[in-house]
Length: 412
Length: 78
Ligand SMILES: Cc1cc2nc3c(=O)[nH]c(=O)nc-3n(C[C@H](O)[C@@H](O)[C@H](O)COP(=O)(O)OP(=O)(O)OC[C@H]3O[C@@H](n4cnc5c(N)ncnc54)[C@H](O)[C@@H]3O)c2cc1C
Ligand code: FES
Image (cartoon, rainbow over all chains, first blue to last red; front, top):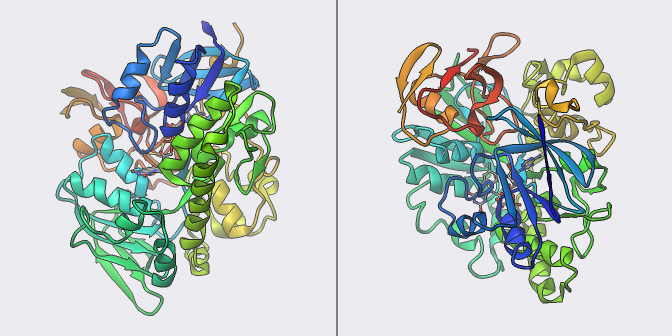
């Protein structure tokens, strides 16, 4: 049986952006349906943490909070179909306004051995640990790029991991330029690696070449561009920055720009009544996400956004710095060899993909991107490695956005 | 807290995800790929689908996105 719900606004995403938005919409008298596919609110950053602010919101009579529910399809931007994985139920939700606060995921670049058990996303490993994954006493290495490596290191260390080092592909000079002139209190502190990461080797200009092991990870082969060496470890957290989550926006038909949901000054997307906030409009960290959540709510309430303008410009400038400070070196696009799997779902190798000029042919001939993840992992990779277009129409995002039982999509 | 993994009872901490519970119980893999390689939770956030298992008879559930509860039946495909 499909359940129906209606409200003034639907907010998808319960990370910093969604939380800020709902915190503004409810007191202003709006009724809100709040959807997030994680079992607990907090988004990627506050997953599993105590959130008194959200606990208060939860009690609100005008809020319908739906954790553990994924948006899987849409009739229109104002009528979404949700699937509740635990209850195996379908919900149809309607509202005149929609806020997409979808967050981001890690950028993955394939290298030989990246499918071995023990190799995880860097933020992914942190997320698993926040969910109770045992890490105490394990030898862990972090590699890739961006501030998330530092955030992960701090969480993993707090959980008792034996951190062996952080290998950042960006050269020392680029990092120094990024850190210099950062607004006080921003990432400079973290990059200086003061407090929580004391004694941990932070090696700029180094990157992983391959993960070694038979049936599980045993060591990582690293390089600084001159020499190569193997570091034995139990787990590798690897990620090369973040990518905005845009699938739902693509499904609805929102315009994208530079891989993010395109928004105007009022955080409105190209579709009437549809707004977007946080990492899904461009990678800029938690402060940008929270601020944009508040701004989007103000816009949805018809309020002016002038009070936010200066701070927002600062956040956008930080986002640009982030992108240039951690720009990826070209060597990273050569890590995969012909046998390295690109599509983890359908076991399609780089060698098998090179024969095709674009997604459409490759999908039909190799099943790349046709598996359970629906191209979420291999899509950005083929775009980066092979130059296949990813924007709307390129990858062809379709409902359902994730695997669901067929009856979920049938009208009753 | 006890859950049942592939028919065998396992003691796991309360409040953890199914992915974490499997790791606590020493399961190195959640599934096998088409060509038979062992695979394990990778993205930790519901994107990669490498962690999918059968939970209480329902196939294709994401272990990283599900909380383990007392008595839950989990079947890996590894
Ligand atoms: C794995 C990971 C770990 C991170 N850890 C940190 C950290 O420790 N420190 C830090 O400063 N930054 C971290 N970040 C960066 C992060 O993006 C933060 O900047 C911040 O969480 C962004 O807030 P947000 O509200 O934009 O998105 P998010 O916090 O990502 O929230 C978006 C939410 O929307 C949900 N969602 C998306 N699509 C759907 C859908 N179709 N249906 C239902 N729900 C959906 C997601 O599950 C998620 O809960 C991490 C990023 C990742 C990918
Ligand atoms: S670990 Fe990627 S979906 Fe669960």
